[in-house]
Length: 275
Image (cartoon, rainbow, N blue to C red; front, side):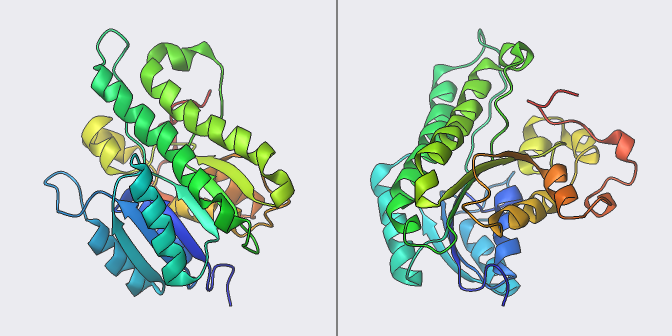
């Protein structure tokens, strides 16, 4: 019996990348995974759909519940949470994974893109977390984990990508506030961010292509870090802005070569982290 056997996680997004890697991590330990995502049909530039992700989760050893929907829509989120609880009898973990990215500078960004990032990143994180709270209060070791950075007030970051920074820091503010608000309920609320860029479709298509992918670590480093966090006692591990390699170091894992690349000097530091 592992830490996640019989536990239920709901994840926003999760069709691919880091979200899917984390889902597979807990599924391999026997978890149930509900996914609320829009990707019902294959995309020419994006690997996988919510249904292929569900197949992978089942193959890994878990039970999957794919729910086609939009984290921006109140009714869809409420319906997804209700379906998850109905299917699996409860809810233990919320993974706020869905996120939109546009690194345009202020004069160049379209307000449509600004609104999309605010609605998915900040509002979506708030909405899914809020909707799940009554069910998390009934769980034995409840966790909310959000893929967002530490609140680094070095003006360098806001000055480089203001719209995206506002959206991602909005997610992190949800972590900060809910950790304080829910500490008496014993619900852990934390954020996790990678030390380096991670080999995902966003990096391939938006952040540098093959060269950036060569300087990335695999999504499995985030999955292993998330697994360690979500297994910790919820009353003892809350209000943290974790970095993936620091979490693994706390678990006694110092050799990160399995996550690539072979030459660690080639790794590219992720944004929002000072050198």
